[in-house]
Image (tube, rainbow, N blue to C red; front, side, top):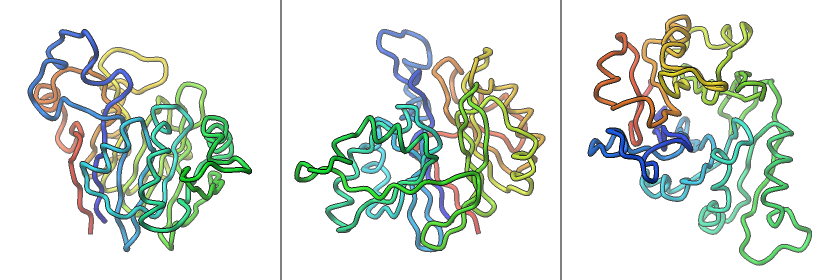
Length: 254
């Protein structure tokens, strides 16, 4: 299995227009972040989790030539806005793109991209096959996926577990039942917005505490705001086995 960080940032990400902070002016590529998303390849299956506004550039940068499915964590625009840019995959693969999400997520996508679902489609619009998922395990082309229910303030969000790898973004609470689903994870990607408290995201300290409870061999943080601080500095402050993720980072699991 190979996991690529397509993006590790937020809509409060980097660079911020008019901001003169050290992070926004940093020349370290790890401080330059697209919106949070990952690409996963396992058992011949190519999957993206979330299609934010940067989706097109993320896929070009990562050179993803084939895409078998898209899985959505939740319906916020910074995780769905790039859906229109699946058109090249429709064309090259000659297939409708399967998109997986909870009913509320699919309903939101249908409202925001109503032209995709119109009875009389304009030629060339994205072609999708919307597939509803629940909290129950499901499969994509034979690849087993376990949903991990979490809360983003009061909004239900899904993380996902793929074998020994788990991905949890946009969360500030993980129920005990979901913590049990994360037991034994070897590689964990977890939401950590900034050092200061936030209404709907884990802070850095909260994310460290959760990561240590889960006990993965390696944890990477994502959904990082420019308010977090410089990547190089924050990374040095973190405990062993915990690090900030960065755009383009690739992880390989046996």
